[in-house]
Length: 502
Image (cartoon, rainbow, N blue to C red):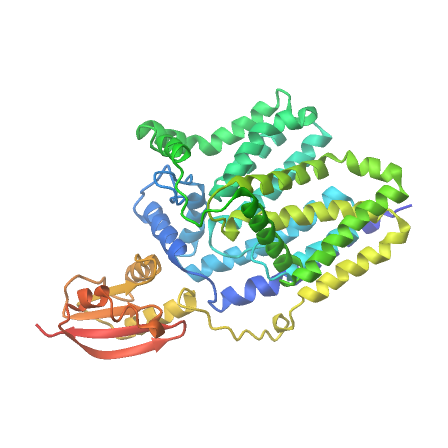
């Protein structure tokens, strides 16, 4: 008989272990300023700063990439208190997301334990996720897709509670969290929206009941700002959406549906291998083979156990969602970027945990299962992330610490009347736009002006020389300046100080 007095200490020790395992990869880099601060982060910080200091509230968020279609505002409002408390400091915000990432791995462990009732399998799989170098496991990026797996896990938790007892509250949480997940990644969000609509008809036993109206209510709460925006703007997004459906623009390379099917499987396989086997596809295939063999072994050795597995609603729901994901992105005609599939690793680890927990009930399989998971942990373990932490990576031009060095250099010269221009492959350089605004807000530099005698040019990808010979460079210098000084920075960044000759 299980001694219940030992369950809590074991669970607490497991949580502490997961915290320690997840800490290095997610904390060491942002504490050293080694985190992405590029186009998306700069744009979002500028938008949130307007909300905070100009009281410029919004009903929509950033663009989805399709003309006239926008995310909801919830990502901005999630960021708002964090940016406000941090004083607008990107590094402090990054550290908040590092802690959020660490606790999201703890949350993953707790969900695994809830679904499997098996602490050993849950701890070992959560440790794999904690050590994994795949950003989709406990991402610390200041980016809206970072929140997608978190909201997905919350929806899984609510769904599990619904299967145990019908509850208006958990149906509401399910709808709310599902649509918050939808609101953080557009393409995968469309899939979740479709699945939300058809779920009551697929899973009638749990969903086809009046309480599902509370899930719809949760969805409406999330959609409400965009509904208001639509009413105020003559249904701009609705028209844009139907315009896209009627005449979809494919920006990527066109391919047949069979070619896309193979491409999507290969892409998902690559993501799975990056998440579980440090990008070793051969090892990943072996891992998948073990899981499938385990299912076959259960079928052969224990019919009763297989019957339980076959009727496990949470396993059926997750595998159906995963299968629907493959179908949806096979039909999806355009390029599928990795972040569209941000939930895939979380989905896979939940499915794997369910299967392994059934296998663990067969005495003969306990040690082999533990051995396989320990191998995955060892494969993902990084010796450079144990004290003393040995981080040698300097980042690139979109890494915060390098952009900050540029700003500190300019601020150290205490320029009075000057112009400032930065250029990047994205044309708009929102990161430096924000950093200039933030530095001037703290009185570290004066606000730049146009057409001044002194001009600072920040040039990205300096080694390529492509911006030094482009129209942009000549336009900003008017081909009538002399370079007073220049300084190179890590990340292939160059700062030139120009003086006008006219």
